[in-house]
Length: 209
Image 1 (cartoon, rainbow, N blue to C red):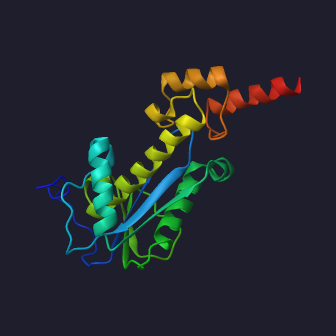
Image 2: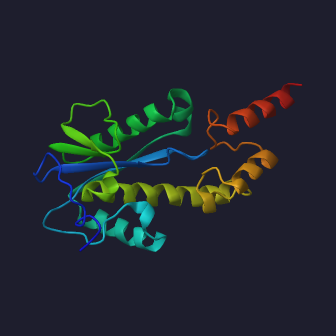
């Protein structure tokens, strides 16, 4: 029995065209916020689906491959660092979720969204707090989104050496804070997030004086 089957939870929908939606990257100081939408195939079950944060990197990679192969459809979307700084992280996340569902090759009958906020769309659906531990489709979405974003941060570690992106994935660790202080913000840092905001302002001031 996998983690999903242990949860005594039931959605207000029992059909076969359920899309699960989740995001990764709301909290980091750098990088895009990435979302995914997944409609699973009831005839091709996937064992071991769970909250992506509770899985090892190796297991996430294995499950992501299986999800891409077995799901009826899936789509990964995002909101850029520029959009996050322009609209704020909540609005950017909602935008990215809309893009993920709109990108599906099959239109869902119902959408289950992790968390407690529903994006502004016309789809029928519901929000599910801690949904990545309760709804298989949301778990699958969380896995795809995390595998995608983590891979991008590893690539950014090579593009912008010294920040440690491969390790902390953009989150505000002590090492990351020290790197920003020493090197200044990189092009993928969110300028509206503290302490990046203050450090970026200080950098701009030093350039103009």
